[in-house]
Image (cartoon, rainbow, N blue to C red; front, top):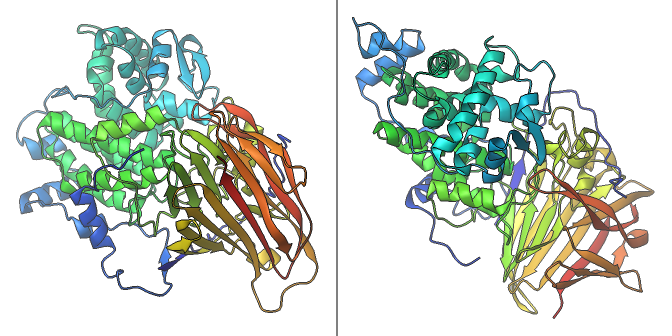
Length: 633
């Protein structure tokens, strides 16, 4: 069955950044959970009989309240309305009484989703953020000097608390948490000022304070406890007003999750909880697509959403309150799309600016959810296709880039792919744009978002989608046509995905079409890149093209004597052969070259690598280029 994606263009001025060549030169798991399956079935109702191509919006959100409407009595509805209108929570929960003193009512069993190495570094006296050590004594918590965005997020969201908790028993963490929290409170007393008071950071911070209260509240009788309890109350009240007005995205989710957690764990919090969870369910529907993929199409954004819900559900359990079914189902819905981007080594592919998130981070998050499921099969909206044969895994970006309002660090990666054989990554994308400012120089970050930083075709060194500042994307690939099917090949069955995008249509009058076919045993990946004229009357002349295959870390490339192939030796001793197949129709002076590249790992470290590049000139009337990756022995 064929599917057509369409993403409406943004109404904004765009500035195209040309993507010049980079200068750096599992066994079967249990079936999907019932609740997740039910929501998928409801969301896709009526599609089973579709035989022709049809159009869907990638930005089409999941109407979660239409699938599982939150249940509430008439009284609860009135309480929610009154709280939204500004009636104090204590006046609704306990009328005619004084407001109860602030305290945390229950101890949360914190999900183990922190980074143990980063927590150990904190106990040694420094932050470890994207591989960079930052002494605690040198941190300016007041934000006078702006650090890298990832450093700011770690400091102000208190995500380091999860790392600290994962590194040692509670009693060994308290003194470190007291020191950092005291310094932060002293430097950030002015609310609504600076990065610390962005809704996302404030929401994540409040949630972290409540989930890790036994660590962060400090010793009894100390000065920190009353100051932090006051900060918790003030932050919750601030988020009551601000979170619902934040734009759609993870920021709003984090803010409303913090509000809901405060409603669960602070005295007289029922009105706040009812208000927060209703708004949160609606906001989740605006964050997530119909098949469970976040609309940012970013693996770390997917993980962040899962982590927020996991922490919040732990708060419900601690408070002995039944969580709304919609929140439970949403978390179950978020996991299968994430597994689509999991390679044979257990880590994630490098997509939408993220480095290759390591296997232990993914495994700890999945273990914290307790969800066991298979990768998403129907990727109509998520857009990432997963082909698997034997131990070979192929990830294929067959959807348009995220729209500007959803993107976090948007990349022009349409029709790029990654490939792994077991634990060895053979073809990758550079990744790491979101990690720039740490070990990745900021000047390189923009280039890592370009089409040339991905394993796909590039025309005239131009991006398939305009790369704008601040992580946003402009016009370009708006329509992606996809068809997936199983076929019979000479070696048996094969999975085939055929996709095309219109990102070069306006500028060059050409459509890029890519066909990937993976044999059932995983021994061969056949590829074909085709350029088709947008109109019957094609343009005259020729245009430069390059088809890039960025090689995984440690993969050694040895060019063949005829210049039409290369042997690829993986670090674990596997041998693959890359070959150009047949003559390149409509092209001239086609050559296969090996050039320098880089790859950014999940800790933000850039590694020098290589890339194979098929380059030459092709007719503006179209062209066709076939290639093959074959496992030897």
